[in-house]
Length: 84
Image (cartoon, rainbow, N blue to C red; front, top):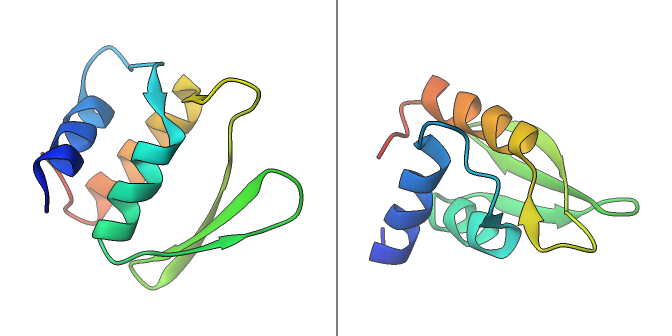
């Protein structure tokens, strides 16, 4: 995993929840973990990782991911042993 991806992972696990993580950085981290990312309807993005599919909403008009999505992503990664 590249240094940039590790930095994004640390931001995801930071307390309190960080509300200024760019969605493109999260997508890059998930791709580095081996995720298959697919476009869905509207702003939805399907992420196939750990043998399951999760659907996230690509933020707009701001490029920053909201705190609820970060918390959900943190929980999902933690359940599968991905921590900083």
